[in-house]
Length: 218
Image (cartoon, rainbow, N blue to C red; front, side):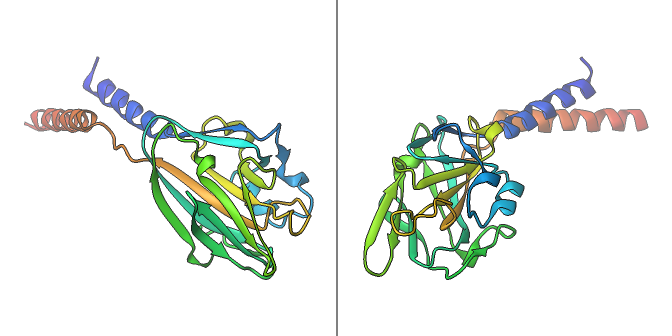
């Protein structure tokens, strides 16, 4: 095998490792409903453009593969008029009280609301998440066992997601079943860098290529 072929193979292996880092498997949620068909959904075009073409409702699981992952939650849409909060492990991480439909899918964090944490591989991420709705007169909570808990994701990728959208429907307070009262983008990436051996091999191959070039010039 020539040096050029070796370098091409290594580059392909490295890019393949990065491309395969899609660590979340969505289990349950029914057959899914095309986002275009969700009645009254205020953010159809934004969700479709961002890959959230199908709605899955609880009960569901979001199972992480066997590594540690950095998980970032970013508020991208809201419209309920109530005080809505996303909780991680029982702690409020994002709270909003939008009066009217607000969205920011372009910069990725509506009102600058974002939260990042590390989650161990093998965890059902959905089991750590819940919503709280404060209507001013009552407080209601939903978790991934409830159909008010929704996930917008690409139907073709539900077994290997790295980005998806949580969509709350506060139907216990306002029965519209459109899952747009609070929408949070979730980005999941591995905390494990490429193996040092692979990087050293790439560097070595690069050095060999440089020596060959010098010899030819000499």
